[in-house]
Length: 344
Image (cartoon, rainbow, N blue to C red; front, side):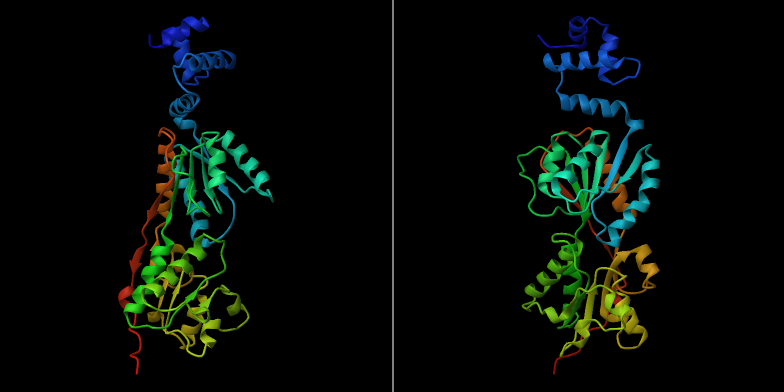
């Protein structure tokens, strides 16, 4: 015999209407009665705890509260994401609270994140997120969107998680940018970036850069890679790759701020904008005065919208294998690039 609302009502000693309201977390039913009805519905097999949580979220849509948990300030591309949150969330009746955990060790950090999840309809995590952290959040059935890639291996695909990553494909972008310059005849392509956390933004750009060189039959040359950021410019020094015996004829640069080195050289007529491919958002390229330079442009508004929509859908989706949604970057002004010098 199947269990119905009538069965639960008879067991608890309330009306069918009260059972329905309690399972929808309606404030008209007191907390004690709600708890008795929930326990009975689970004991009789009417629904599981996870199903109750999803039903509660669905019936409380206008009260959704998401936490944006900022684990690290790693790069300007994703930091700009925060500025787009209010407009996208406001249109959906969602409140977002920004959280920066202060735990110095992994267990403390995990406890702080779990505390946010306990009072949240969902979480967006930005920074060095790994599989153990996602598995910990899965115990509380907290819907979670990771902004960018995971650090280290993905969770076991057999493990049911209510989590999805949304981000940019930095490795493919770096590979395509480097390959584009190589195909134009540049044999010495440099990379200007910054030191980054393993597995995150700048590290993935280096991976894509190295991959393009490997596919072209070229060896990675550390002399062509300057990862000091723009600190050299503040000291009036050239990028290390410009001091190499055989300096690069073209560059890829994943951050317009660090590309200030190239603009400084272009202003001094020691380098041409037509020999570099940048990466950035509309705002960062504009702030750097490089909107006319060849670039792969990140649509931060689209990234924000996809993250919010994905997190919204996770409220009602069954847990499953972890996966990642990658967004492509728009190519701009690549026709302005100059061909490489012919080899003698």
